[in-house]
Image (cartoon, rainbow, N blue to C red; front, top):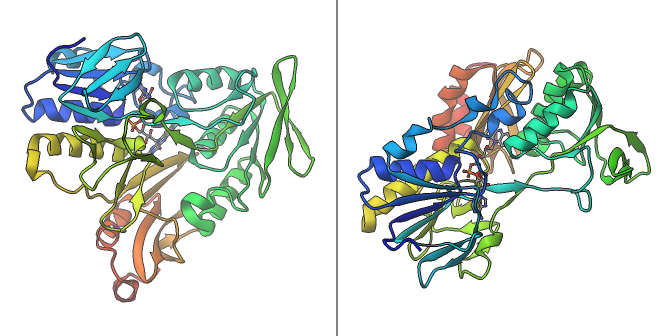
Length: 402
Ligand SMILES: Cc1cc2nc3c(=O)[nH]c(=O)nc-3n(C[C@H](O)[C@H](O)[C@H](O)COP(=O)(O)OP(=O)(O)OC[C@H]3O[C@@H](n4cnc5c(N)ncnc54)[C@H](O)[C@@H]3O)c2cc1C
């Protein structure tokens, strides 16, 4: 067992790395141990469904830091081993190999794992897209130009559809939403993006549930929809979201609902903090408890935890304007804020028809999000309105005529 305590970070990815690095660069002088269930140095996930899947990048390019950085920062790595349990009273983390790590402060950055359809984990030809291995397996499958059926109408599925079409695969995307991506961007922008996919040859099956994956000799050969239709497939990508990775914390005494429940400073318990996809916290701007699966949020929260550990009793509330992007074909979609729950969407710049525009999302009379396609600067100018939750009545009078 490590005798001295210090900082233990569980989850060697964007959030955990940001916390470990932020503490060391901020002057933390005790030991720092970064525990990662994957056997790899921390790497970036967004390119998995973009540059890595399309072979524009190779996996080395995904590394978040050069290998020598960890030793330079005095960060001890325990890779390829999962944390199994947390004893908060004794301030110890037990690893799968039996080792126990004592800590003074613990950061939970265990992220999320891809949801799978039940009963298909062992079937050849069924994919999820969360890890570098997942992406490389799907990339190999796409090289054989299969008919790819994508289950789920979110960003990851839409990005994979774009890449697969670029590689010449036949692609069908099945979603239970009536408009693909509507959950993420609303029906107006979702319809525009669906149209882009259709033009590029993606077949869209909307308002439909996949009831089962049909298998022959241990491999997927199609999917059956709830209405009885069968779609043949040589490869199936399940893109139906992710679960926060909290299983190892069961019984620890931490409050676990949709992720690890934190206070507004991202503290989850005595000496325990959480950051990134796994963390839920009361967002002071919206008054809602949020858990955000965005790359930028993972780094921001990891850095905020580092600052708060260093600040001791002067720790401060985590405040953010969430940011996410998605690349599909030649379109870059960028969003500040939260689009969900909006009751109106207003065009500000450009036109949806030309696929170059910004829109504002309004909920209960206040601006809650701004989305742009191909308009980086005008979109950035709208960010302060989102940050301030500006009243729409005031904003509308000051906007350029669209
Ligand atoms: C394919 C894909 C594309 C994406 N594209 C975008 C995008 O375009 N824009 C955007 O904003 N976001 C995107 N995201 C989301 C973004 O990648 C995540 O928000 C970000 O990776 C979260 O970082 P994290 O450190 O919180 O968690 P993760 O990156 O999930 O890392 C958690 C780490 O903890 C490890 N772990 C889990 N349990 C244990 C345990 N018990 N013990 C030890 N280690 C454990 C996991 O193996 C993993 O390595 C994408 C995600 C995916 C999967």
